[in-house]
Length: 263
Image (cartoon, rainbow, N blue to C red; front, side):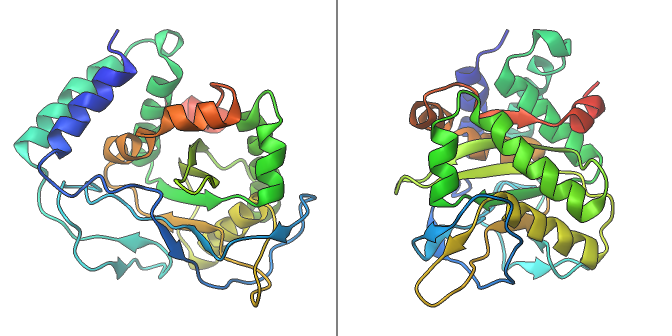
């Protein structure tokens, strides 16, 4: 079975001559948003510079992305880009067989890659979610932080959509020590109101964030998912750091509804 290191190495090789794998945890100011509902995780004063969703340029080919344009929902960032390189196609071709085995035989990171592909096939989107300091502390003390975080996400998505939204995520830690999530989800609709409801629900699931002159900060960032394996490789590059930070290897989660799509 191909190891996690081998999988990422093959993808990284295809990205080596490009600027595609910029660090996913570059910090940038976030925009104000409407106050989310309190889901029980109390807020604390937080830094105004949070982790923003900076999609790798390999979100469909490997190249520096052109200026983002807005999707018909006016809420999902998309990037126009050329056809994937032959090198990229060859690297991806090597990864796919390793995750095509029986689900039971896959390692957690391979299951996550397969879940990302399943989400892409169903028209899924990508997301990044910042977490409040209080929630970060709560997760750090949990024996299964990924499952605990999933409870918050499940609750808020159910309240927002009245349905089980398929999703998956993994934790990442920024250079400044801020815990956050990167993942995918399959929305039940691309109507703007629905997407905005998803956005707010994810923000609620991240806990309250407060800053000096801002009541709430935008916590979730949504984007298109034209290259699931590229997005997977991009956000897995610091996977070990999240495990060390949380003191457990339980740093990924795949919802039951998305697992069904992986069969």
